[in-house]
Amino acid sequence: MPSIILDFFRAVWRGPFGPAGLVILGLCVALAILGPAIAPYDPVARNYDAAGKLLRLAPPSWQHWLGTTLLGRDVLSQMLVGARPALLVGGLTALGTVVIGVNIGLISGYFGGRIDSFLMRLTDMFLGLPFLPFIIIVLSLTGRSLTTMVIAMTLVMWRSTARVVRAQVLSLREMPFVAAARITGASDLAIIYREIAPNIMPIALVSVAFALAWAIITEASIGFLGFGDPSVVSWGSIVYDAYASQMMYRAPWWVVPPGIAIMVLVSAVYFVGRAYEQVVNPRLRTG
Image (cartoon, rainbow, N blue to C red; front, side, top):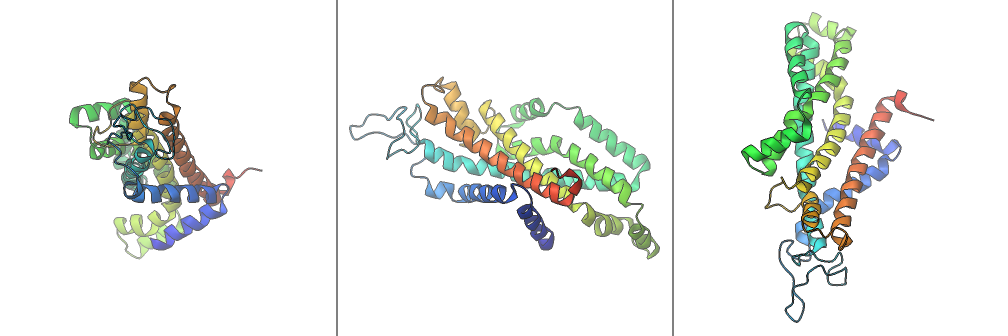
């Protein structure tokens, strides 16, 4: 596994825009880890000036680099703290999505027959679920926590990965190395996870990257719609607070930074995934 991860980073570094994506993603991960520790103020505390007046919608200054919100909260501190929920939800969702999707794709493609038919009909059923409305309904019924959000997103995001992996396994199971493993008496599970699974790892890693991007966008969307965890400061919830306060145009320093952060992070993840995809699949290269 460490060698596979190392090969992944080497491949991304050789791909177009890959280095930029890795650097930006690394910086965002560092902010997610260190953000709460380096935030200059409590992200939910109200700030006052020397005269004791609430710093309501204060523009950027030396004391508050990104200004303050309608309630006098420091926007920079909220930005630093908000990086962690975005990457935490995105990373856990991407991991869960790939684990479920890869295993279903492996089992379905290898065994075929009734097992394949059942698993693909199950996949079709989840493909028919509306993505964002389903997540919102689950959050409304079970509670708006980050854990629930991860579970809800994972339940509907594995479907595409399962189909892509299954298509690859259908061709790999007919390869000579699989036949040789059968002749030596290897069990089905050994063939699936020792012989076939390593050959679909590039597809799985690409799926991780794109699932991470989609999960980050979805987490921000849920926060913006007001269905996120009310006790958690996230980039989406910052935009939602600005919108709900009807101050998006009056205080652009409140809404622009989280919007740019979401765009930059998702772009970085996309660059990483696209760079790796073009390295492992030369047919995607252009020019």
